[in-house]
Length: 279
Image (cartoon, rainbow, N blue to C red):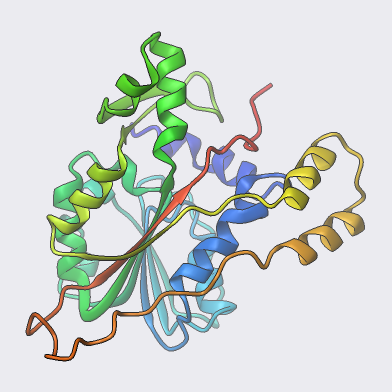
């Protein structure tokens, strides 16, 4: 059984906590990168329970959203939105018949691409699923986050740990009895895997918690803030990510390719140090 069939519920519960990195920074940053989805078709690969797929349709006006996840523990989409949630493995995206032959304006991997067993195969599948001017948005953990952990766990130097690109297995934060495996990367391995599979990297963004949010997280975890105070702090400090998802301007001599490959925006997240630690 895939570990995510066991972990999805606990994972999603941790992500909706007010002090989770997802609530404090990630989702706002991800939405800023995705840009407007009004009237667009969206594919959310590794969608978890599908909550964000529903939100992209209901709150942000996507014409239709398809979510794919191996966990198969989905929310029930409301009747007033066009959201389809499919059980499927992102490692074999090209075998999911329900999306075969479809084209999407936007494809997103929100902290999921690292779990692909064959990233090249997954990215090739995504390339074939995007419209001609489609956009791929990738949100992943910062490479340094895993280099530090690997260095400490395996007793090797930080430089060696950083360059140890490949599968890395560890006990899940949400259930220590479940081991999960994903690929650790360097900046170059991430970039090259995208460009090698026909994408143009437009921009890389490394958001960081503001000082106010950092203090807020500490206070929240210490139980010093009421829900009203929490909401006030969040409202005042959530405007630190710039909207930037644009295709490059055409050069003076026109485009260099007749059909430029889809754009990809890579979001490198800082260590998820605010994720709850199991009891």
